[in-house]
Image 1 (cartoon, one colour):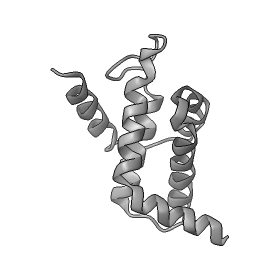
Image 2 (cartoon, rainbow, N blue to C red; image 1 turned 180 degrees about the vertical axis):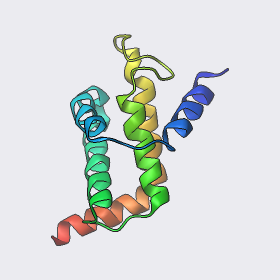
Image 3 (cartoon, rainbow, N blue to C red; image 1 turned 45 degrees about the horizontal axis):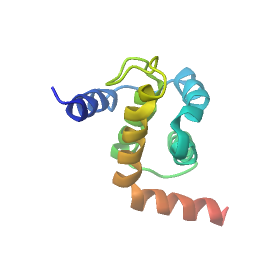
Image 4 (cartoon, rainbow, N blue to C red; image 1 turned 180 degrees about the horizontal axis):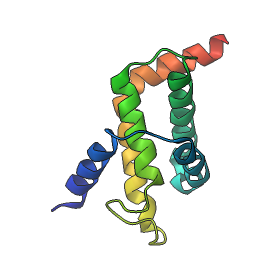
Length: 117
């Protein structure tokens, strides 16, 4: 199976799972490994927290997409295990990049919401 297909399959599996407080804390810690996508991922975390707490209105499908990214980053067992230096985070970065692209209009709305606060 091609690596990108495996990454998609694993990511899709994560979209159906719930994100715990521990997952969110681990995601914040692990976000530093995402190189140029750190700030994008942290924005997704904030968007997820605001969406689940009721501070920001967000669709369940958008929450599912974000939760898939969060759980993918948190999981040590993904397409390229994170224990491998340098390459272990490339698939995580690819997933975050995919989610940012998929939710670009929703992210822009959220950024506007934050600026209005």
